[in-house]
Length: 275
Figure 1 (cartoon, one colour):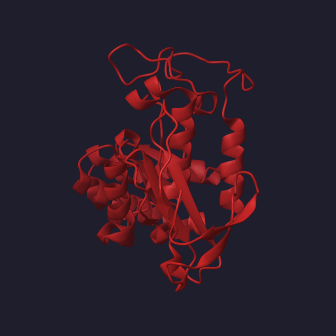
Figure 2: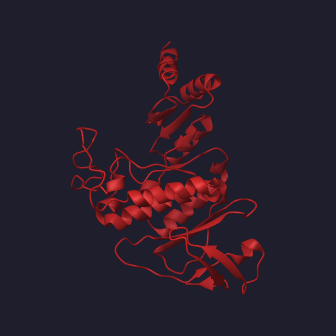
Figure 3: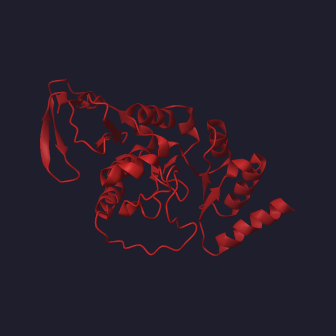
């Protein structure tokens, strides 16, 4: 009877027009319940999305995805180095979890104000935005990220004056915001199919540990997007990097046309190694 009552709570809100449910800590509830409940709701309303907000051990997170959750929280929030991000990106998109898990990259959440964002300033917010929006198919930001809100409780990964405990009136035009960056990223995600191709994530050589360099492509190579992100929020960085000419069947000495999607500038890369 409890299972039926909980299912009916969800169906009540679905009938009111709610189609997305962010489920808090589903790993603390019986797995058979979620498999049954999600199946019951989806049988009636196939368009309903369930987001698994489970920051727990890898196996329970993967189990919840297998049971039917449409999207899953991830460890991205705490991964900052090139090695960490590369290994996790490969795990999610090129190994077994890609068959059933749809990860959502959140730079921050109502519960988590990561240490990196507490100390990185505006540059760190821009870097985390681009990483989240380009590495996997789904990303999300919590209120205040647009304004580079980073005030924290000393010694904790929690927001000072948290919206969980009080109402906040945000000035969405306050100096230092990154709303234009978010608008650009979202527009490119809408206009170009490659960033939405979850399984196509590839990492390429950039000879600097502070620069993450990756790419997304459509199966027919009609759209091919390369992304380079400076992970160091305090120091400008540069690097020699490889242009993946081999992906197009071209020799190392070939040239290829490119477009800077931030500025709109068009140019040519000559040879496999550029700077």
